[in-house]
Length: 500
Ligand code: AHR
Image (cartoon, rainbow, N blue to C red; front, side):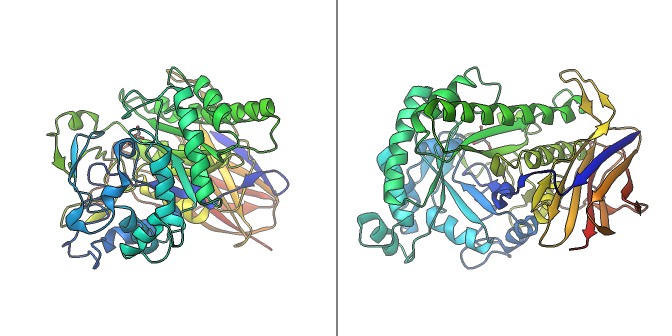
């Protein structure tokens, strides 16, 4: 099978926002406790943050971390998580039927994000709470001093403000599973009022309004129109969430799901522009894809977990090679929409549907999905090039016209590199890729890295990495064409050097 793409500097989609490579830590399962934070672990620092985990997160070059939820935030009193540890209340985490010690809270999160060199993306509770508590939290975090909440922060040992720029106005407020879910009208009203107070407290912040929990919600579309009607002038982004599942073990169909994600993005961008037109606004609302991943392996196990434990092992999906391909297709889809998607969070980061797993008092290790994210995050920064793929397509149970090759390229002009990311959905034969690179003065192939395993159910563990990238030889430059062989069912990164 053959595939052809053309890369030219005159045909670009847009610049990557560095926050495209974000992730997410929720008070859920073992994400915080025994994940990023485990006082007494041999590799914990003096604050209890695990160095081994921080090292792996730095390897991923995660730029922004959303916190503290997710569903958890809709029942969270942020005041429970600040101040002396002995005064922090043990609460019920009603979203996840667990106990919450509150030993990790806002100031610990701020200190931890410094350690991993990431920005914070803070969510406020618009479920059980509202505009006032949200405004107080902005004052606590961002106001310098001389007000009740800023001085409270200082009295808790955080002299300098945390300067959190990015804030989420609640989480999945359309979902019946959400603590105090709301109608679009109710949410739009409270979000607009919270946004006003938050921005009056710190005008430099950016706000994300909740879009639909996923494209299959019965209110999808109407929700966005109504919410944006209320919040348009006050917010900067609207959120999108998507999790893929492969319950029927139908890999061709599973790998086609990224087409659905692309449609979701384009539809929400269209709705934002429709409301813009309706309001005769000059402002464009961009997209925050602040939860995306594969999630289904742990669903049955989670039903059997005893309630009201502290840090129960919830949502501990062990990812396969097939999942790495699906995650790769999702990353490529985000990049192909870089003109509108400015923020994206791989949900989540540690232990909970995560690229990094930990053992309590033991090792930390990389899941299969770690590698596509790492390569895109480290090398996929710059100008995203428009590179339509000409190749064969197939139909699956739910989708038609799925290209066998999914691909995108990024021109990193700082490093003089053009980086192609590609997933082969052809499970049986290699694809001969020809990339027309006449638009660049390419001097060499720096590397062709491939992630594949004949067993699409292969996964990693703390003892063995069965799925990890390897160097693929044989690529060549012929006149103005790159020729490379893309193995069946593989994730690929091809880095080309170009003359300045
Ligand atoms: O990431 C797990 C959960 O998925 C989040 O808490 C919620 O926002 C979504 O439904």
